[in-house]
Length: 449
Image (cartoon, rainbow, N blue to C red; front, side):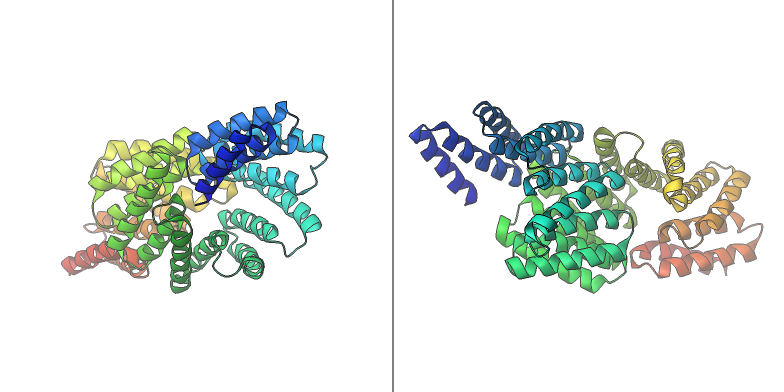
């Protein structure tokens, strides 16, 4: 409806023949096109508006067009560096207008911060989000809904760093502000609610997470329509809840739905697809279908490498997951190649608190060596990994390492093998999504007598 109204106003402006009025209308159409996922159309319209507004000296319109292009090109279309280039044009204009320390300047800071967030440059992103927040708190006041949006963005950085308590505090404050200013069911509140649900999930509070995500989906569907790409993220996150509950078939279907929503809006290669594709692959893997999982992991890997480069932690994650699928299929050579790359990436990031991630890779390399018949090397690597993991890493990694070592030791040290398998069963028993792995360990223990 908003687009229909904007296009109607644009037609009236064109009929009048007054260029400034037409430009004002076109920037609204371009902005709405971006919000609706029509990224090519949005970029074309806004680029023309930027030039035409600049030619007429309409600097405020030009900076608004440039700012929308930062987000549309640099974030939504995942062409990050091009978005940064647009940010330089926007920065020049807000400085010329004398509004760098005003809400218009804060909007530019916020848009470019989203790009750096997508690139995983959290320190740089946080600094920009904090600068935008400070400007808006000073000019608009601490209770303004834009301040609430800024708090949500800042919370996202803390969440990405694993600082869940601080993230929860900021999300809840954002929701307090938006409820007072906009009401309980405004769609803009959905983003903070969705991300707060992720915090609850990280804390193991599955019912609270599920309730929030169901509310978000209801609000978004009413505001945008049932097939809008905005529904993809909460759909993916609700599938995460179902996976944690052990509802693997429902989780798989949720991930598939999220992928379909994003593909319909953005095509098959957009960065936003990588996470639900990876999750969908893992759901198939947990269901015992490694053949279905591997091509999904490969797609996620290809997308991340194309958008982010070959050395990002997200790339290592996709490599690790594909290696799991290849190990399940006894494709040892391919798994070894994936793990070698993943280990190099994670070792480079170990100083950032990813030591457990390195141990996960080492454990899988031990499984590969056992599969290749190199028992001594595989056992030694698994022993190292189990010690390094401690209570860190995923249940899948900790349980699989113990069970692989148990099977290897069954003939030579049956007592140790049984103890390791019992530890694996206890670990898997605490993770409902690992029900197949638990059943396999329990069956193995029963056969050992």
